[in-house]
Length: 291
Image (cartoon, rainbow, N blue to C red; front, side, top):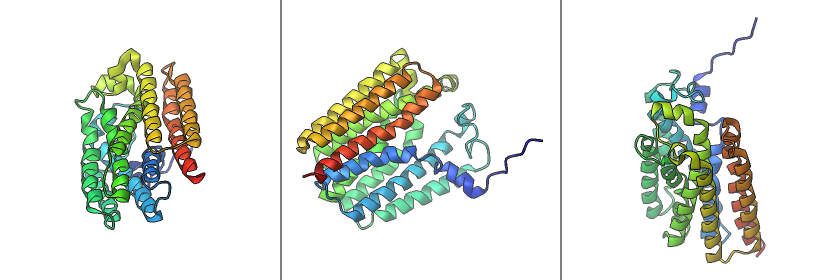
């Protein structure tokens, strides 16, 4: 006889709802946010800000996952990879998911209470963007661009927290993050393209069509070019350029993975973006540390 898998407890289901078992989304938010903190503070960020933004990133990503699954529950049942998610499978209710999302968002808002009013105002915009992203897949041809804004909004917030203002270079960083998000989330969308075509969800992988791989590489290129311009603005040197070179190497490796458009390698490329983001941040941090 085959051993049966014991049913998951409610706590385990909640953990899966907010993707505690899949931290890749959190680090894809965290690396750009940390990079912005280092740039805004001249390489010496306050440890309290580091703690607030790190915890806030984790909380808001978790809340976003709960909202996303609530919004997509009728679509997820038609996608092999998502059919067993807690809401879609009926083991967690939509009300439970919304309550968890609200609780996590409240905790994140409480975290930033010691910070200035501009950060709080930006946090409201960040919450609205995160909550509305799942619905953009209904009508927006490249929802990944909107995701890039949601995933990168910690960058202008970091500048606001450190400097009390959001300079143009912070918005340029956010724009660069949009291109990066389009790149890595298109790789992710390539995994589900066949299912998404059947159920009518719009994704960049569908919109780009046979030019998907070329579009991904173009987005990587624009992202790295923007980072190079930002580094020049801040007077960063060789360690930063080395970090960008490693990031570019990661992007080339992703091309090798995705050019065959097979599910498993495309998903592996998506997950490998953790190293690309880490390389960029490491270059920034090392540049300041060696001064």
